[in-house]
Image: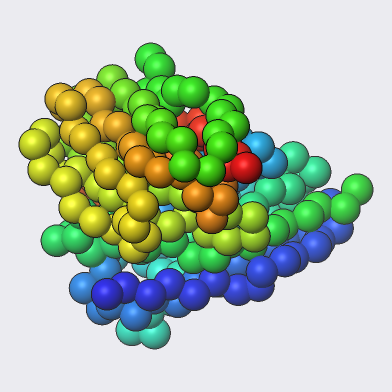
Length: 112
Length: 113
């Protein structure tokens, strides 16, 4: 089955700096890669996703890049703000699969 | 638009007691899921239902049963609760890879003494 590894497990950045979280996946058939943000005590919320026919996707300060050859994808947050502090999860799924496989999460702390 | 609704939000049980967690979605999704999330860990799939009338085991199904009551509702049952099942339980709907991003409910915080 699919295996998703996520790094780093914790990340601290100064407000205004950029943050990058990286994930690798094992199943070359995976073609859908969402990212979720989970604030303390809240539900995971989808913030951005990318499909394998696209190399990069942006939404304001958030971007995701995908390297199918290397089987890794990354979340980039620019101009970080204190409200970006949360746990971020990556996930992967193939079209034939009916489930997501999640990474272990990254605790992002944005220091004022 | 409520999305995914879970009940209850909190519950405390004694070892050996049983209970059912309820989940309903109003997004007309065929696929629904139950996850558990333990401190410092990611989301682990317990069971899922690809369509009404079907259920499949996920990564950690032992100690749980599920029922897909209809297209909207998917329940999770603990027959004989154990302290190891203390966790936060999330229900989700939407099948990844089919243009149905997966959306989560608010979770049920379950403590078993």
